[in-house]
Amino acid sequence: MKRIAVLGSTGSIGTQTLDVVRHHPDHFKIEAMAAGRNAALFLEQVHEFRPRKVSVQDKEVADRIRHQLPGDVELFYGDEGLIEVAANQEAELVVTAVVGSVGLQSTLAAIEAGKTIGLANKETLVTAGHLVTARAKEKGVMLMPIDSEHSAIFQCLNGEAPEAIRSITLTGSGGSFRDKRRDELAHVTIEQALNHPNWSMGAKITIDSATMANKGLEIIEAHWLFDMPYDRINVLIHPESIIHSFVEYQDGSIIAQMGVPDMRVPIQYALTYPNRIQNQAPSLNLAQVAKLNFREMDYERYPMVRYARECGKAGGTATTVFNAANEVAVALFLQGAIGFLDIERIVYQLISKHELIAVPSLEEIQEADRLARTEAAAIL
Ligand SMILES: NC(=O)c1ccc[n+]([C@@H]2O[C@H](COP(=O)([O-])OP(=O)(O)OC[C@H]3O[C@@H](n4cnc5c(N)ncnc54)[C@H](OP(=O)(O)O)[C@@H]3O)[C@@H](O)[C@H]2O)c1
Image (cartoon, rainbow, N blue to C red; front, side, top):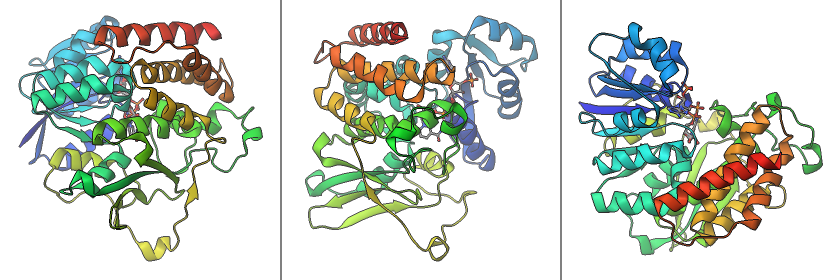
């Protein structure tokens, strides 16, 4: 029985993680759970999974749910609550599925407490990859990727020597606007941007997929997870999302991981590794798919991928600022305060004037993150 804590239980990854647990009560037990402000769903989840510790985003939500919790559940709230759930004694694996760099401190707390990390919250690695990976190494903690591309790479790398690898390639569907030209993007709506062709995900990552900032974040995530130089991480547009990513070896062999696009597959693999058990996902029928398409990544059409790569190569606080500016810009777009192309304009303005700290401390990262958020909001 693996004991699990879920950070962000009410979100897209969180609910799918609970669905995996629901189908395998003999394999997994939820020990602790944290969510933001969706009190109704959170209460339902707590009554179904009976964790011992729970946390919500703030005191107001905590006060609303306090008297509706089972008597033996300990309730926390705020950043400290998230940390309490992440570092709780009972769980051995923590799924980090909150959205944004708000997940950094709780991820570090879980590492400090020696938990295996099921890592969905990619912004954590983008904002402070060197700190998170160094601490995980020191503590002997495994970072199990949940992002489908990184889970694919992890599976394709299984057991091979690092020097045998020529490159890794992250595939990307191209997002909601993959068939639109750049000049058609100025007036696209929030609803259009949220309509992803292959995946049903949270709002922020769906917009990140439309701008392809998501692929940029994933390049940086892959750099840290697999200790891979940026010039050996490629991106390929693959509209069907069947090949989730692949590794090319020195002898020209390519090993790819394929399957239907269903996040419960990589989530479950992170929970069961190194074992595999059956799941609810349908089998992939290649005869029915019949044809897989690929096209080159266009860095002019999708400048956010280029910016992310440049920030990744610059290192230090450059990726922190890229991430923070993007988080603010996406939130503004989702509020209807800016247009779609303003997202990349805000990010570009911030990263181009940033004064880099090459090897920042946690405090310097937090300060760069805070400043970038203030400045990004001020551009409006
Ligand atoms: N969705 C996918 O298919 C997918 C795939 C690969 C990677 N990822 C990554 O996984 C992460 C989560 O994505 P998602 O799509 O699941 O996001 P989402 O649906 O927006 O869910 C975010 C979760 O975080 C919670 N949350 C937000 N702020 C919080 C705070 N301050 N304290 C505690 N909880 C907080 C939300 O709670 P409330 O809703 O209760 O407010 C919700 O449970 C992101 O980093 C994303 O890039 C997602």
